[in-house]
Image (cartoon, rainbow, N blue to C red; front, side):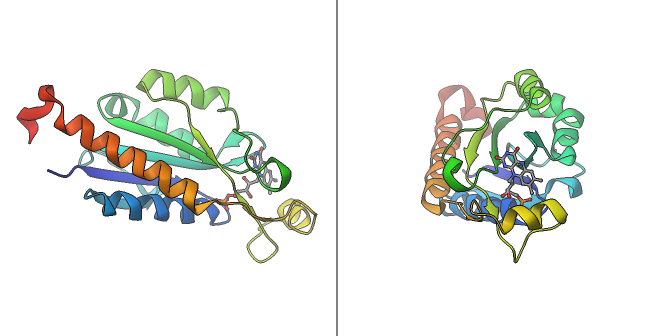
Length: 175
Ligand SMILES: Cc1cc2nc3c(=O)[nH]c(=O)nc-3n(C[C@H](O)[C@H](O)[C@H](O)COP(=O)(O)O)c2cc1C
């Protein structure tokens, strides 16, 4: 039996979309049915058993559309398996886990999700949008710090956890 998984992402400059696609591909390899969608375009999560949600970090906050999604669907999310990630650090801090913003932490607690995993981000002149991003992308912290091996390994863990839960005796009735 495979489960239907939504991988939803919030991005401004495209880097988090790339991470979401890589997670989706790994989950598909693990035998799940997967939709990878921009979170602002998701109206309903009824058809999904599992939700993976990721946001880019800007000034230590999640993108508003990702926070809105968590808030709007918190009752339904509480009844589903949910994994969270965020992406941002580049340069020397690229491997530093980032704290969940307070609002996100409270919502994660409400829905019973564990802390968000941090993945490195990307800040490059070719993709930077906006004055500040363009300036930062020309500095010495610029670059693509997304570590595809780490991202795929995390997605493989999620995939295995989803299989483990569907195989649990108390879930047999849904197979
Ligand atoms: C103005 C600005 C603020 C940022 N603030 C943070 C931050 O607080 N924490 C962090 O880890 N990364 C921060 N970043 C880096 C971005 O999160 C990183 O570039 C990310 O990969 C962008 O994702 P996106 O392309 O999906 O929008 C910031 C970048 C910019 C341009």
